[in-house]
Image (tube, rainbow, N blue to C red; front, side):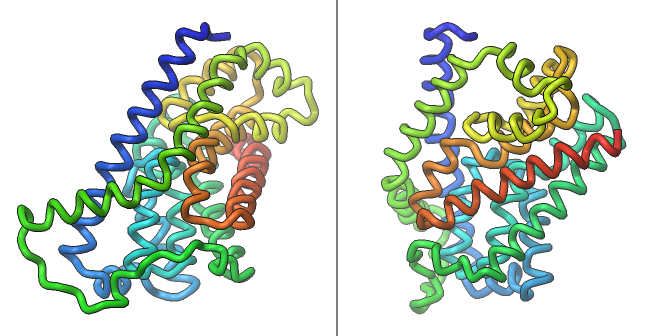
Length: 294
């Protein structure tokens, strides 16, 4: 168990990191949307219910964001009129599937385990996006102003566009301040209160429910996948099965409490709950599938 001093330090570091990341990414996304234009972005990321999600996963794989850092990009996609199914696949894939993570899994665990993890993250992202789209869950996205709804003004040059991009970033961030602080507070408390022995005790190899328990434990945690992998190796060496380790990693990296709290500014409650349930199912499935590759 970590000391409360370490817990408060963790809160401050995570909160500062997320604020800086959100504002920086929102600023860059706003500039990108203005420079490229909503219609061109829609064209690039369009393609229907099959090609669109593949583009979303590909974009997620190329953007090594943590789960919370995907949100400004997600908001920018909705503003640009990107199809819901494409944005959904990006939301799921971005924190879980990128070359940095895949390389780390191969080095820390093994190449076959990396292939199993990649297959779970890739197929899981596509299935989640397709199922959300088939269920018509787009209606549970809160109203987002689409830039294409009005005539686009010509690009005025980087220096002239920067103040508007900064105002857009602050405007996007304002409704997320309270959810972010609440989510980070809960995540930091869990970080301080949950000892490693608890994780290995409840999700050890002797527990037949180890994988679903690890997935449930992982959801409230805020862990970047890159940082979670060495932790996962330590837990594996402490007695946690590899399936439970990856269930914990996928759950924690894919749907942390800070991310879920911030998603409430973009998604209505039913879609937020569906998102959490989808990541939980993906984490459990990954926990059973990935060990088959070991």
